[in-house]
Length: 308
Image 1 (cartoon, rainbow, N blue to C red):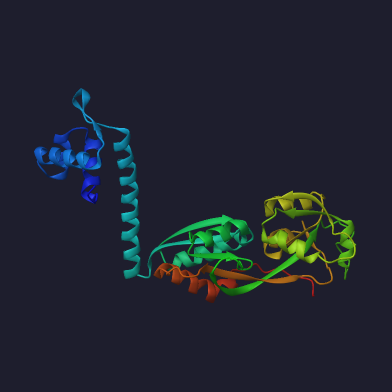
Image 2 (cartoon, one colour):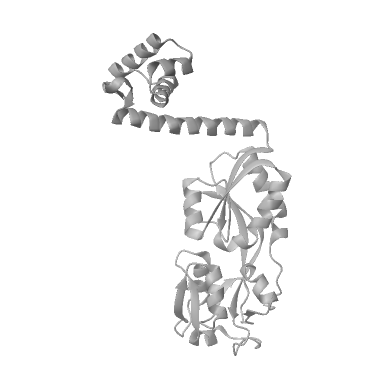
């Protein structure tokens, strides 16, 4: 079979959309005879009929429908290629996809909005998910940059720190430990805890903080896949939780949650901006990366923490 060209795909789509050779020929600015010959040569070459010619109109066969489906995908890829080439000519235009770990969604919108104001012709797509989701996106190289708690060890990436990321334990404000100072973490082993799902960075921090104790770790009372629902559960008195301090700014300021003064807390992690290693950065992606590295820290929530 000879190589199928874009002209072949254009021909099949035009006939499928117009329904007749004459209409398709006018659309493509060729004669009806030339178009008929082109389709016949194509069908002879591929060895299958692409059109059903009964009833006076041309209707796609199942093979023809496959050709049209693939042609539409090719058209989208060509549009993406055009956008990519345009972006290489103009660093202030193009498209950037940013992955946002669920804990970062409390400040990421402000960061992205500020970048967008300075780059109005850059199209921005955002993917929000837990750590496992963002790591998968980096592995598959479906994001240009990602905001996350710490870079994956099993995926080739480039990473830079852009700010501190404190982890704290919170309780309802009327909890017996809410006003205490210097709580030993062994005391927390007798408390029920609400935790994030396995695979989240917050759950990894919880497991690491209580690992290696002589006493059994705290009882996991409820496992929840959302920071918002975790906070609501704590406020309802269902248990304590270990959580990013950057997710509780409003609730602490309003007196709806209390940060416990636990020895060894806050656990000070870092916020990273991460990108797939080996993937060429587009000008728009490079601009986003540089913006986060230079200015990302200024968008982190401000919250008073116990002195470690």
